[in-house]
Length: 219
Picture 1: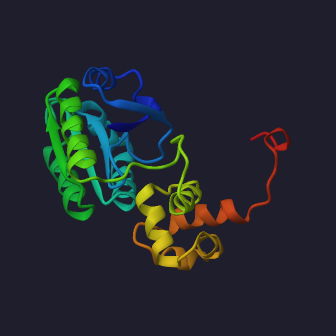
Picture 2: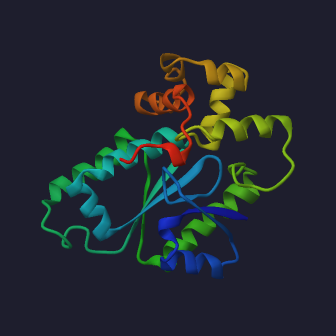
């Protein structure tokens, strides 16, 4: 059983606990989520302090939106205590944010006491997804001989913000890799989970002239 882990979680105790539970961990730079548990399940992990800070700086709802648009079964794990006492945020603002996340973005919130419990929850979900439900894990990064359909998914997963789930949706909608690549921004947005921003990034990658890294102008 494998879990794809965002590289920013490398030093967390959650990763150490997952190692103890004999899960295979693959570290990647993830655009969305902190842990990918199958092709349909991804987890955004927030400690209480980070959750509250994310409300203050405006990151939280954008992260929830991206997670909801990318995965069929996204989850938010809220780790720790002191949600209403850690920072000077009015309780109504916190409740409103929780309501928005769960209702507007259909994002379930699981509460855990600490990193060890977070790791156990993740492990339970992985076992259900990869043993009982036989769900697929993302292909990109795996070293194996791919079938034709897997090769097609592999190519589409290379587009910005495209998970295994979205790759399959795009291929099912358009019918081939070629048609995905030639689809306009408006056509891309017809696929569930592809919003305006994501469609724009895809078209930019496909249409922009290639400039080798050593020739790119300094930013």
